[in-house]
Length: 77
Ligand SMILES: [Zn+2]
Image 1 (cartoon, rainbow, N blue to C red):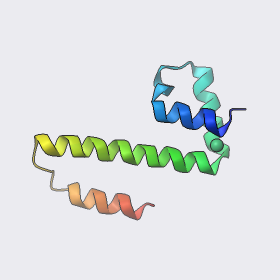
Image 2: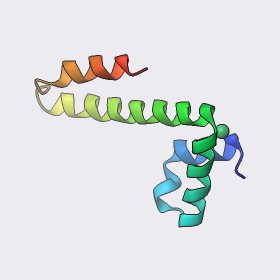
Image 3: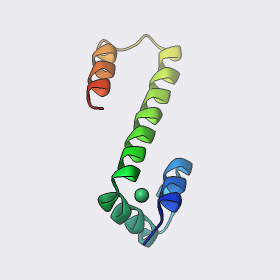
């Protein structure tokens, strides 16, 4: 079984997509059982989406749904 440290490291580096299937299954299994790492994974996802949103906002006008999406995102926490 992977440790929280292993899992959080792999999640935060984004290495997961490039690792073996066995590695990924190990992370998934850990996430399935570990609340803390699930929360961490969600936060990372939210940060990545926010970063992409911020990047695209500098290139183009925010979409109409942008504000609504942020509100919905905040409500999910
Ligand atoms: Zn964990």
